[in-house]
Length: 609
Image (cartoon, rainbow, N blue to C red):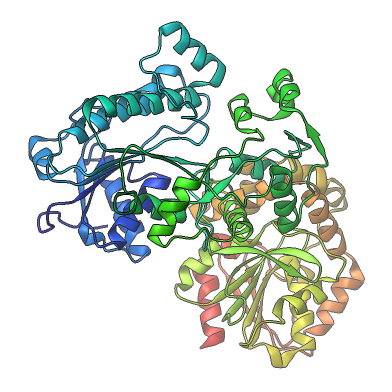
């Protein structure tokens, strides 16, 4: 990516520290949306830093921001009161009016000095630097919502008291508590116009669900999703409030204009967030998983081994029943014309994105979420009403197996679904054909159904029953024309699949040196196989697919339905496919959509030409 030159941009009037972080980048975006010229301070602009600048600019452009009004300078908030800026950059930023410090080291398990270097000393460095700006209007400092409850801040603390703080709270929360007091005391001493903003748990974007951090509440959702949340710590009244990242960033950007006097502090959270047990039940229903029915007092969780509870000790201080005074934040939001988005909708969209991104492991191939399809909470991605292609995966994969093919096709409308009970979808009592019929009920186009392996059965049956609803059907490695799995493999399938490692599953499905996107797809499938009952349901699909009468019935349908077939040279068709058009891909096996996505995409183009 070409880096835009900063030389033609006017002097910035706002500076953001932590601009590539989850909160920071959204703050930059909304400042730019206000028409402001913004400077982002990034560590080491050369080498790795350049790629961070390119990533930030690209991210902003993708969201329609005027990235040409962004200045990027090299600096580091741990580089002393001058932030490690060059003399030229420091002079260029001499006239900034507003400084936003969104930088923090947010991670549990930190060492004390590691956390203090960024969260305490770094915050003070930003404050000292801001004090030297001749036109400073406001320093906006992001704190934490569980800190700053004391009216009279004390800094510095005696070492014994400080050591007890870090021992009892952990390095992350201890550093945030110390930093909150430090910036309040030092800002008063230096006459810096300070506003402290205390966000609650920041979740994804209210519309897209886009996430960017995966600890705290996100980790609890991961445990829920993977079946590793047997009991919920806390009480029926535990309150873990949330705020969407876009609302919080807009609030940040609005503070200098709409917060009348410096020196205030604002707790920014959605007071309508349900109590934590209700949040968990709501998300469980949405994701199609089972919510824990048991609650365990936090005091008991603290005494149990972490290996048994799965709870990070540093998170337990957040599981309280406290409520927070949001009156001052509400006044600022009202003055700026900001309203909290519906919290239930935001939580569900965020959970969808967490699952799609495998909780930070990778980005989803297409935006997706959960929908009711024939009684299944089905994971769907892409265009549900007007697709050119409907893509159905085989075993033991999920919808991410089409990642490479979609990359080759470029700008096409596609609907990608995880089969019921497999991948990310919940099971259903409906037949696969009835599920597919319900999936396609909202579709208003005549798409091509592209199905791999086990999914070729419902695809072929739907094509035979509804030829007027589709433009064609492409069967990739139709299992009913290929060798049957051995009885031993079928018997061992469930325990093998649940425990198999990603490298072993990759080698078994793809052989040596598969493409990077194929490895990502297999990693996604392996993650889903470890969820409760997914491996067992996959094995059941495998057993059903090997029934002789089922295979014979599907072969017979080819005589009545015009289809295209793609088969790998190393996994040839057995028997006569009748009138079907067959394309054999050289050197491919049972998964050509993974190993040879360009060849499969070319066949798809020919069908629609």
